[in-house]
Amino acid sequence: MADTSVVYPVIRLIAVQLPALVVAASILYVAAICIYRVYFHPFAHIPGPFFAKLTDGYGLYHSWLKNTHLTIHRLHEEYGTIVRYGPSKILVNDVDGMREIYGYYANFAKGSAYEVLRFNPVHSVFNATDKKMHRRKRRLVGQGFSDSALRASESCILEHMDNFVNAFLKSDDRSNTRTEWSTAKDISVLSSYLSLDLITDLVFGKSTSTLTKPENRQFRSLLVTTGYRMTMAFQMPSAFRAGKSGHWLDLGTWTLHNVDKLRAQWAAMLRGWAMDRIQAEKTRAEASEPDRRDMMSTIINATDPDTGEKLDAAEIGAEAFTLITAGGDTTSVGISATFFYLSRSPAAYERLVSEIRTQFRSVDDIRIGSTLSSCHYLRGCIDEAMRLSPPVCVPLYREAGLGGATVRGIFVPEGCVAATHAYAIHHNEKYFPDAYSYRPERWLPPSKQNGNDEISVTPDAKSAFLPFSHGPRNCAAMNMAYLNLSLSVARLLWLADFRIPSYPGLGCIGGGDPNSKDPMRRREDEYQLYDIFASDKKGPMLEFRRRDISI
Ligand code: HEM
Picture 1 (cartoon, protein in one colour):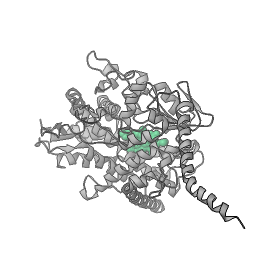
Picture 2: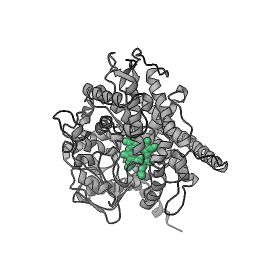
Picture 3: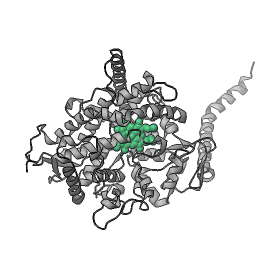
Picture 4: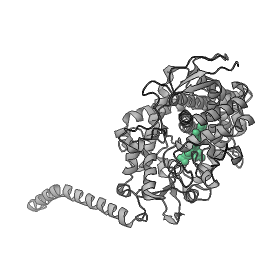
């Protein structure tokens, strides 16, 4: 039998000392990690804020403040082209570096930051991290955005464009006479309704109808809250759990618990809608009804040209969720930013309405086709708005693969992360002189520019324009996004004039506030974005009046 006079003191010693030992060991461990990260990490020589060298909490904090894009731009101005934004993360504000990260042959791929965004058990084209798996999904999903699928979706798109225009003009009659000025309308809200109604209709054949049914408008806030969680998880994946709403180890559970509940409801509803859509497509096939072949039916029926395989039901469900998240609000940021900058640039506004109103004889002529694509100034206005306020305002992180990679001469070890941030490179004076000015003429070919102000973007600057990212993981639906942006802006401006409301306080909504506590948010003429992976936004508030087209 053990001698209790020895055992008890030992147990007492352990009970008293152990917690202290554990605390001391933890402090030593954390201190050793900090010392390694600051002095010995392969990125130790890269300049950046001290806190970012220690922890991804730096990026998490700024995503919580929703000012990631402004912070990154400021850091590049302070530290230069290459900045350390986390212990194992660098940001590169340069076209050559951007190509080395996102190009077709780059040894970089989406990594843990995307895994944690995955809500479904199955990967989608957006969050697939394995390159081979992504190539297969992209081949299949990409068919939904082909020219023929877009044309087949046109009537659906135009129906929602009509609802959008009617929301401003308070009348769906097509009379040719001028009306009174409307009350002030919030473009950001109405364009969000348009984006969501349209994408749900294209994906599920069933729309949220938020433009016409006010009782459905809670759907928009679901998208915003889902995005907020995504952007935080993206910055510090180790603190979040993929697809585990309510998991106690998930930081989102503690900081955003309502978001988790709402997100789960939203996902369940979308899953149900996706299953209905697949079933409807099956029934249609069994009844040998002619195929609608719109965006989603194309995706459901798409076959891999190499293997003949199709996406299975679970994969289609995952794609549906991704398409709603990726397409549900991004286009609306582009629309809102375009109206914001036009409302502050009378010369651009005049030139644009003159182009639209001379190119088309009626609003119904504004549809897919060569006339719309030949509206160069319209495209310039949209591109310049997305340059100044790019809808996706997180840094799109890529992880170096086996053996590591080199970016601008810097070795990025396997598993470490690099990114080029759209907002920062769009404001880089090397590519876009007078970077904060709204100048749609930049995007015109020299022959189309007025007068002597030939400021066309250089080929390098074209490559620095990244609203849709670059390379094999760029936006799968870029054509559709441009179509929706062009149709919404052109149709509304063909029918109506707008003005900034004179009521104090209304006209400035959407811009920076000269008295803001945050010095990065004081530019009155800059459309303000709030990082929720894509962007949240407010305004602009504008009044509309149907123009007189009888004369
Ligand atoms: C102005 C509107 C839009 C902008 C600025 C935009 C921008 C982007 C960007 C920057 C990415 C890359 C994201 C990343 O690397 O993590 C992306 C990917 C994607 N976008 Fe868009 N997007 C827009 C509209 C849409 C719409 C309307 C849809 C769907 C209907 C869509 C579907 C997708 C998909 C599926 C991907 C993933 C592609 C892949 O990884 O292969 N986007 N988008």
